[in-house]
Every structure is written in C-alpha cells, then in structure tokens.
Length: 239
Image (cartoon, rainbow, N blue to C red; front, top):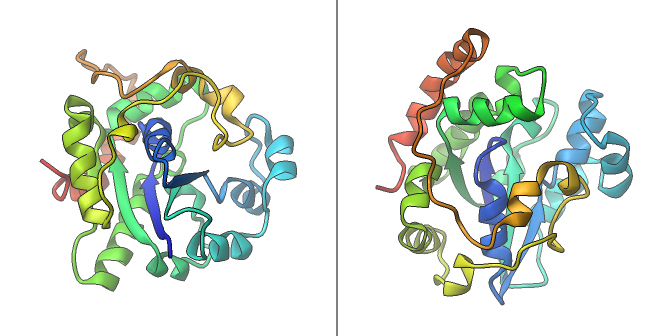
C-alpha cells in the first residue's frame, strides 16, 4: 500500500523543491503537476511549451484523477498539484481518497516571482481561491484542518518543518529529504526547462528571502484580493 500525498500549492512557491525532497526518499516517488496537460486541454490556454505538455502527458482529467488515487510503485507517492489547475469542469471527489497537505506563500512574494515569468497575471493564475476551496473540501471530509506548510517558515528550519509534515501525513521523516543532486530530475515535468532553472541549481532548501517585496499597483490589487484566502490557511500553518 502507498501513501498518496497530494500537496496543494500555487505557482512560484517552493513547490518544486518540496517535490525534490520527497523524490529524494529511497521509498518515495513524485509526480509533477499531474493535471497540467488536462488543464491546458480544457481551457485552451497557451503557456510556454503547451504543445510539448499536451503531447507528453495525459489530457483526460478523469484518468489523471484515477492514477492520483490509485496504487503506486513505491510506498510514498508524492503529488505536486497546482490548485489553479482544478477548474470547475474537473470532478474533485477523488481528492477525498488522498492524504492532503497545503503549501502556502504570501501573495506578494508569489506575484513578485510570477510576474518575472508572465506578462499577464490574474487572481486565478496564482491559485489562492482554488486552494482555499480545496482546503475547505478536505476539512469538511475529514472533520479537521489538513496540514499547512508556510514556505517562509519552512525555509527557516526545513528539517523541523519536514518532521512535522511527515508526522501529519503518517510517514517517518527521512534525512535524505534535505538534500538532492543539482540538475534535472526524473520526476520533472516536460516544462521544467522553462521554469526550473533555479530549482535545478539547488541542492537543498535555500534560506528565506529577507528583503521586503515592492509590487506595482496592478499587482498590489491582486495581492489584496488573494490575501483573505492566504490568511485563512495561514491560521492553520505549522508554527
């Protein structure tokens, strides 16, 4: 039996580093953004490398959901999910069959990073609304708040944070999660060459950014819209 861990995050978080941490476990395997191709197929959006993504990965959301909740080749099956990929057309009931956790980061830092890669930014694109919806779904199904990891707090003490996360999802912490080899990984999605330059240069979790983030007015408005959803999950984050 495998523990199928769904980590629900928005983009430009430490989601790739967290995936590498779980993939570094001898008993672990990871799946990078399972619904990305299905999301692009459903919405018709044009992202960098859209054709390559659609050709490489499953376009049918139902089939993706079945694999997410199904048996895995290793005991720890980590899934790096982007919350904005879960559009209303996709059935979310499969989520109840997973061990769910949530990775958050302040909207200001998410937007500052996202805007470096995208010219057009929307509230939907950063996934805060969908993250709060999925959080509520899991909490309602289980009767308790699922585990929440705040990226900045995690980076202050990755081992302590990972120990708490592992305990919350019912697996033992493994020190192998703290380090990985630089460069591309077998778990990377086909889009990695466009997005993961910083992740590929890493060999572990980096120190948190100390400088304050300054956003232009149009991004400040989106940050203000996202803030209530972030604060809702932040209230449940590991100290």
